[in-house]
Image 1 (tube, rainbow, N blue to C red):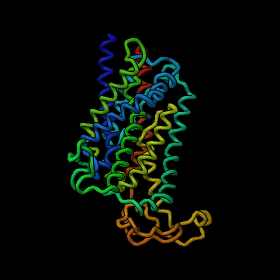
Image 2 (image 1 turned 90 degrees about the horizontal axis):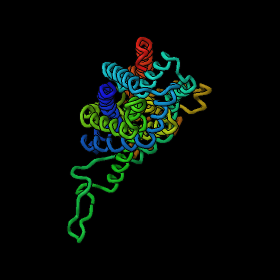
Image 3 (image 1 turned 60 degrees about the vertical axis):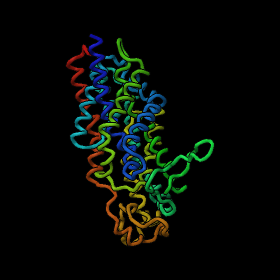
Image 4 (image 1 turned 180 degrees about the vertical axis):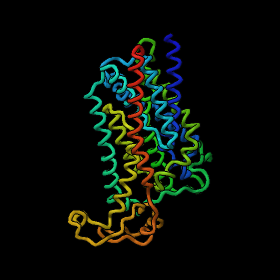
Length: 392
């Protein structure tokens, strides 16, 4: 009986992991793939390696929270398998609505539903987690706002990320020992910018592993017949990697098309900010959605860039005539090398003609899923464990 439950749990874990890999790989590597800096297969391979590193290190703190701290009893194997099923249902609903899956929040909701049904919910831990769910979007928005208002315009004026035809590096075999050299059309600037893009992609993959590997692994750890943590982490990593090589091939092409038309340079700022927020919270054991920080940082950086024509004093006192606010300012063409108007001055015509940075309806849909996902998993888990208490 235990073996059968474990097999079902492993299959459920693989299903969850594959879908996590499909969405997370697209978010982490969509911009570099779209810019032609890295190929999809290479991105999926790098993603798998750094997801494993994130899950094996920082992710253990999140796994401990999910397995031991949300409820006051051990999460048994059978209960963990049921939790994985509810996570899978949450993924299904999110896929129907076409938004990235808030897996961490759905996982917490399912375990919290178990705790409510059995009277074992650790309310202090759940309130602490939920408080971070409220604070994180605010942090992402304001950090993005500061970057968009004060940092991005100056960096964008000085930095341009380009890709040339041909290989980035070549091998010089003329000497005694073959050595790598720049490709035939590669400049040192291109090599430096490409290296930065790849490092940031690896960092985001690490962050995705820290926050998402526990969602597929933790429910299988604990109780008689459950998996050892190390084995569960490897299983979840392989499943996420499989999603990266399969489902993510499509999401790496389409990521950002609905939510935002964000340039690669701005995307790198978003990736660093969202990854840092997610990694820090994972390190302190908070299950958090990488998508949450990513979405709100995009909104923040666009808003910060758009509000440069208004000084802080003008905004507070409202002693200013109407000034057009262009949320899509960072998408404007021809900004590299040009003078950036100081804060308080009107924007040039190419900025005023820029399109929208993000789709407000898409943002509302994403935020709605942050509420619907964990709520649905909590209600379903509560109902199930109330009707079938013998599973616990």
